[in-house]
Image 1: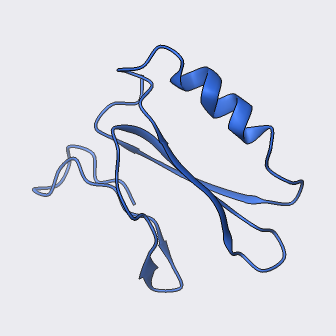
Image 2: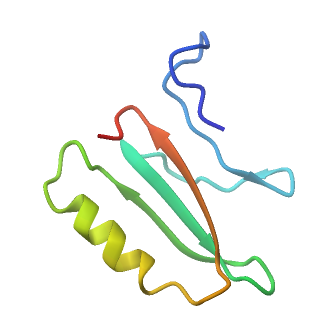
Length: 82
């Protein structure tokens, strides 16, 4: 859930799985969680500041390429996603 600028709680991001907020630390940019396809255990969690770090987009793509086939990928954007 990303509230964007529509809410009085603007600029927040959450990822909720089975009634548990699994987004431990929200970072600026893309917050990505990958879950194992079979049991939905978290296999990857990372924030990618694509606005403030030149190599963040490249790193995000490289990390995506390591996810096993069948993984579930959940993403939210906090603050800035360009």
